[in-house]
Length: 517
Image (cartoon, rainbow, N blue to C red; front, side):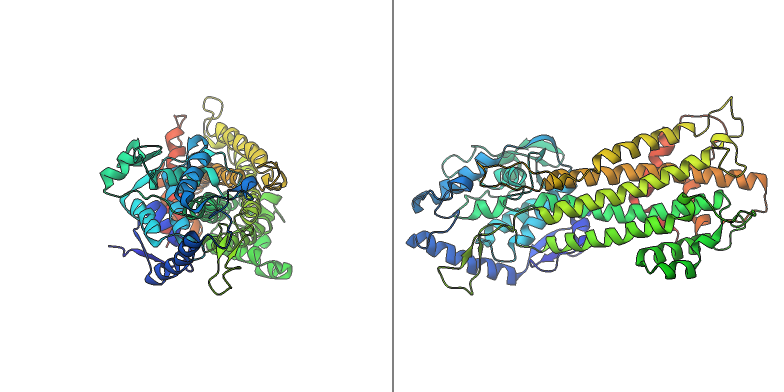
């Protein structure tokens, strides 16, 4: 059994997020994190007791009401009202894996100890995560500016309770496959909901956590997509009897681009031993083959940059104000803008563009495989009885549709800004839209790559039928075998929707990469 993940606010990784979000690994707080949170909370409690100093969100209102003094005896009501008033998201709910990732990341950022929240409140969040109480979180309504205010408030509705009426405004949650009122879900799981004290609501809903969660899942999926895109490239190169010179190590070292060198090396590894490569007298191939290391290498470098941004965000204190116990009492609470989602917005838009390129160049190779004018002797639409049968004709239609949609989705959301809160929040990054679009583009890319792999396997079969002595490359042969274990050769027209679904599953689960050894 996998041991629980220990979080401390400093060491959370992307693989950790995947383990918790997709494989339900349990999570516990470190003792050191609890001690840090308790120390910061003790200072907040002293402010509540004395009324001094004036601290945003503890004894003031929020946003445009930051200058409004709030009596200390109203601090619990202030926290509750913040959650109720801000839980105004709309749209389809986030998938459970996104909610789980966000719950983990939020708990980890609070564990840093700068937020003034009670350790018990964070423990409640982790109890929900471990028991599988997943709040229903609408996916639209956040700018990723003052954090994901609406999504995190919907989460906090389930975690928290009204000081007077426990059943009032409890949100909704999924528990053991059933959609329930939040109060009922928590009761069934045996978890006590919390009355939020001073600063706790602000600690829970102030930070671009859902943006970070979506970006974390998307970057991992994009890296998997790129690896499958390289396998698809190698199989198509082989099926089209491509020229190996374009992948020579000398050529790529001369460019000095790290990703390009790595992609070319991977292709050489996959096609090693193939009798189809260099089987013609062509000097060079079209760009979608010849320049693929330059394109996919640039994508790899871009994804590495995005990964570094997201990894830092996993262990970042992102609410406001933050509490620093090594400063004087007057300065311990520092108001700033760590909640602002600009880093995630830029990274997500960069991810969108990079992932869209993987799909775009894949569609061009798919088109070449299907067109008898560009496929070096393969039958039109990769079918032996063309005319009577249409073969894989529609595969390219589908890929073209997805690639075209990606071009719209990849427009950078971050360059837009609509001021909010009566111009107090006058520059917003639209990070949530950026993250959601990145996730959608990656999903489209998985389908396009699946279609290319399906066509490449069909083309390799046709080469083998034409010449039984043909040998595939060491890596491409393994990929071909895995594909053929799931999807049979297209002898005559049939419904291939299920074939495509199987191929998409192979890509998403990383089966081709895992099984090739």
